[in-house]
Amino acid sequence: MIDSKRLEQIKAGYELTTPGKWTIHYPQSRSKPQIVLVGKDAYLECWIAQAFARDSQARDDIQFACDAHQDIPELISEVERLKYNEAALFKERAVILGEFERLQAIEREFEALRGELRQLGGLDYREGIKQFREAMEQA
Image 1 (spheres, rainbow, N blue to C red):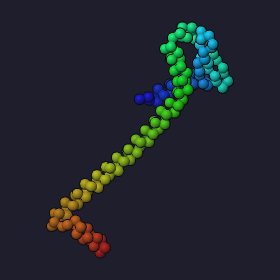
Image 2 (image 1 turned 90 degrees about the horizontal axis):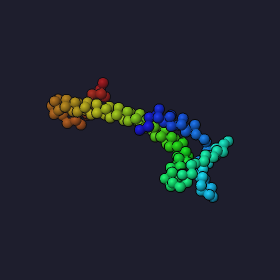
Image 3 (image 1 turned 60 degrees about the vertical axis):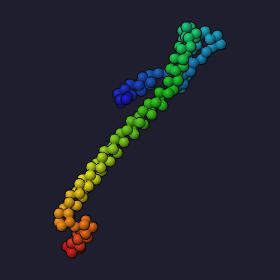
Image 4 (image 1 turned 90 degrees about the vertical axis):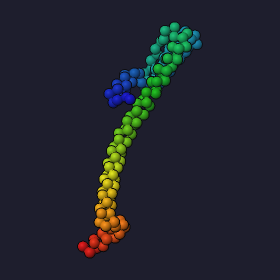
């Protein structure tokens, strides 16, 4: 799991990169492919070693780096959204557990009262409730 410190490191690293969309451009000769970084105020070409032009794995790696540059902000947003939702779920879980414990206490109290009614001469609990209501009305 990515903690907040690691997420901030990723964001800081991303902010140091050239802004804008990154693409790979292969000139007609294919001898010197280049990564083209086009930002709001910047146009930067990075020439790649001639060996990369002949190495399909290197081209795939470069393409992945270019694609990742566009993907990182979306991934950061999704991680932040999930962390926010996780925190909200933990709060809800605490509320639900508190309510569950309260219901368990009520159930224990109910069972104790049912036992007391039985000790009072085997009264049916409905009869005991009726007598209780009558007593409350008289009070």
